[in-house]
Amino acid sequence: MSKLNRILSGLGLSLTLLGATMAHAADITGAGATFPYPVYAKWAEAYKNKTGIGMNYQSIGSGGGIKQIKAKTVDFGATDAPLNANELGMLGMTQFPTVIGGVVPVLNVQGIAAGQLKLSSDTLVAIFMGKITKWNDAKIAAENKDLNLPDQAITVVHRADGSGTTHIFTSYLAAVSTEWMREVGAGKAVKWPAGTGGKGNEGVASYVQRIKGAIGYVEYAYALQNKMTYAQLQNRDGRFVSPTAESFKAAAGNAKWKASEGFAEILVNEPGAESWPIVGATFILIYKNQDNAAVGAEVLKFFDWAYANGDKLAADLDYVPLPNNVTDMIRKTWKEQVKDSHGKALWN
Image (cartoon, rainbow, N blue to C red; front, side, top):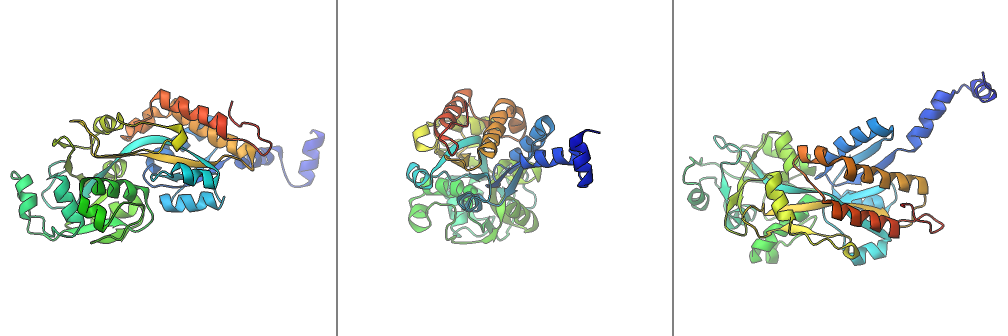
């Protein structure tokens, strides 16, 4: 037995326990958007299997994630509603995207299967404004002449928490409707004209599944995982399209990423015959000056690994991975902006 082992043994410890404690200390924590939770969970599992380092993520909504990173109770925050350059500057943070995904209307109407119902932008706005209240309304029926729509009340389900998914969804409604922009607006939290609220994408999905006649909005991975019925939407080019990785990618092709603006992009109502109209990136927030350089470096290593090795896991969940030129821009931003307390770059 070595001298160190004898000492530890006398203290009721072991080298194995010490190693476990050291490994645990290297784990990283994050909190925020529910939109990317499915892919972050897959990345975290694969990364721990590869490196032994855990990534513990709280899926609490974008608003909660921003609050927690401001309070420095987590190592990174996550939001689908990107902060602007002024906000980032005031907070001393940098921001970068991880994946792109789609927000989809989901419904619970007897006899209607996934992808059967078609909704124009005007009809979707009228439903969430509380102006269309029955599924057999003449406006819905005119867009779905091949469907037998029930005389059933519509229950709108929206997010109850501060939500980046809501920011993306309401940004779309505001982009296609001056009335929505004037009366409700866009943001992580709005004063909804109608409906009931659920917490997180999980909460909205659960409510829609339980309430007959319900309609809500969730990130596409939640619709797939929960085998939910989703609607087709009419895009800017007048085509009715279904949510798919290809239609998200078509919309994402219009992104104009700018590192100087924190890569902030809201990809709603984008042109293109194949484009899904409600698409957005999801973002990570970290401090430029890291109090704990070792933990800050681990955060960057995790997302670097995800960019290099996580594309298939993302695509399997119908997220759109970022192009290599964008991830190269992000790594360059890390090198320029993320530093330890002595001003030394954490990324080389």
